[in-house]
Length: 330
Image 1: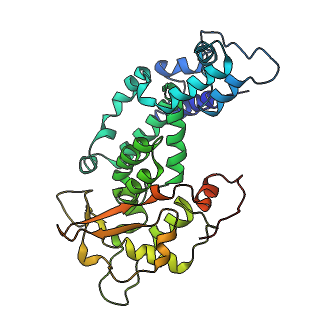
Image 2: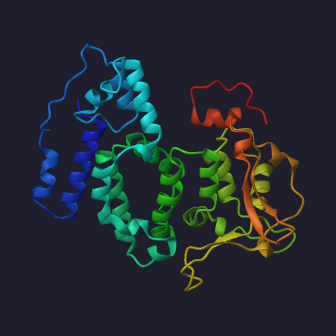
Image 3: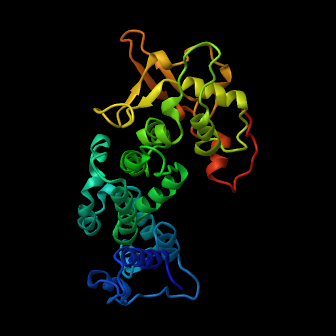
């Protein structure tokens, strides 16, 4: 049976060979198609043991030496697995030299949002794809790589839309990779103010001009329906509109509008609807991502109150479909 790791290897090899229009795999890629030199020791029993189960769930598939390395962490299997999980939950403590050496060729992915506009969008997309495959194959921080894949799907951004062609690389670095194993409220706030997300879900054009103006509700709806509460989270259309009003005024500098400061996120108070809000916003699981005016300095900032009620049942059910739906009332 082919493992997920092996599938990633073969898929990446085929993609690279196709892009290069090769009849045969290039020498530097051929090694991926040859059997590993180190023998793979299968589990000692006919059933999958605890180490194999956990490594399989927390990675893109076990590498040849993974089983033996986890077992070496402690004589007791359960304690060994606990140590492995603890290591994976603190990725910065794991030596990832093998993956980092291969990723250095994609230095453009570490450029600031503004500098990314200097590159061709096709190059950035190809680099993002290749980097993801390399991490899945070579990174010792396997759980981190798996969660990057999970959150990339959850906070989906189509890189074909507008300036997302350039800004998606910054979102991958500053939102997804930075928060993949961190705080969900912090990730949610970072995503809400991500230049790429402001572009993709039209937050940058959610502007209030005069009484009676309707806000652009695209991001607010996705925030409630997909990013947090879920489609059956108990919110109403009025709640969507109220959240959209609370988030009005944010924008990002676009290549269509300016020359300098491309990709910079800004808040324009003159575009923000600061009228009375429905009190219902305050009882959402994330207690809304709302705009507050600092009366002393005149600055505006976006504050995330997700941390105050992180275990709201509707939010938990959205990420854990197996849970019951008891208590999902706002």
